[in-house]
Amino acid sequence: MKKLSIVVPCYNEAEALPLFYPAVEKVVSKIKELEIEYWFVNDGSKDETLAEMRKLHEQDPERVHYVSFSRNFGKEAGLYAGLEATTGDYVVVMDADLQDPPSFLPTMYEELQSGEYDCIGTRRTDRTGEAKIKSFLSDQFYKVINRISNTNIVPGARDYRMMTRQMVNAVLSMKEYSRFSKGIFSWVGFKTKYLDYHNVERVAGKTDWNTWQLFRYAMDGISDFSQAPLSLAVWLGTTSFVISVLGMLWVIIRRLINPASSIFGWASTTCIILFLGGLQLLCIGIVGKYIGRIYLQVKHRPIYIVKEKK
Image (cartoon, rainbow, N blue to C red; front, top):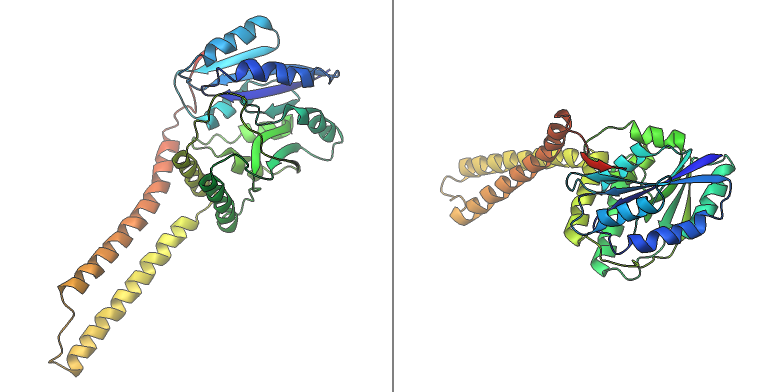
C-alpha cells in the first residue's frame, strides 16, 4: 500500500486545527488504497496550537505526528521541516485554515497516478475577500518577477500541491537558508498541472500576513531568483556617471566660451549632490541585500531547530 504524507505548517492555528483534521479525514478516508500520515509543524506559535497538535496525536498516534520549533522560524522553515519528516510516496502541502480545499485531494492523487505529471498544484483565479491593495501588489509581483527571472512562477499559485517522492527529494536537496518555495517548486522542474479554484475564506482565526510582510516576502523572492536588481544598480551607476561627466564638460566649455558666465547657484548644486548621494545609497543597498543573503548562507546555521517531535 502506498502512503500519502500531509504536511501542515502552522502558526497560531489553535482555532483552525480542530476543524482542519476532521475535514481532511472525511476526504482522504475515501481513498482506500492509500495509507495516510499527517505532519503538523508548530512554527513557534503563541497560542494553543501545540496543545491542539498533542491532542490530535493522542487521538491517532500511529498516523498523526508533529514537529515543534524552539521559536518562530517562518513558514518556509516549517514547510521544509515537514517535507523532511515525511515518509510517504506522495506528499501534499496544505494550510491549516482550510483555504486549501481538501476536496481536491482525490483528484490530485488520480492525476498523479496517470504517470503524466510529477506534481499537481493549485491556483487561485481570484482574491475575493482580500484587501484590494494586497491583490494589486500580488498581481504586480508576479508580473515583475516573471519579467526579470528565468524561473517562471505561476500567478496565483498556492503552496497547496501534491508531489511525487522524486520531486520532494529534489526540493529537499536545495539546502539554502533563505527559501522561497514558490520559486523552488518551479526551479526544480518536473511536470506540473494546476487546478484552478475561487478564493476560499479562512474557517477560523486570522492571517498573520500583513501587507508589509507580503512585500518583504516578495522582495525575498526577487532577490532569490533574479539578478536584475544588481543589473539595475550597475545601469543606474553608469548613467549617473555619464551624466555627471557630460555636465562637467558643459560647465568647462561654457566657461571657456564665455568667461563672464556664472555657474549654477547653491540650490541646484545641492539638488545634484542629494540626487547622486541617494543614487549611490540605493545601489549600495541593493548590493548589500545580496551580500546579506550570502552572509547568512555561509554561516551554515540550521534552517530550523526542533524542540519537540512526536
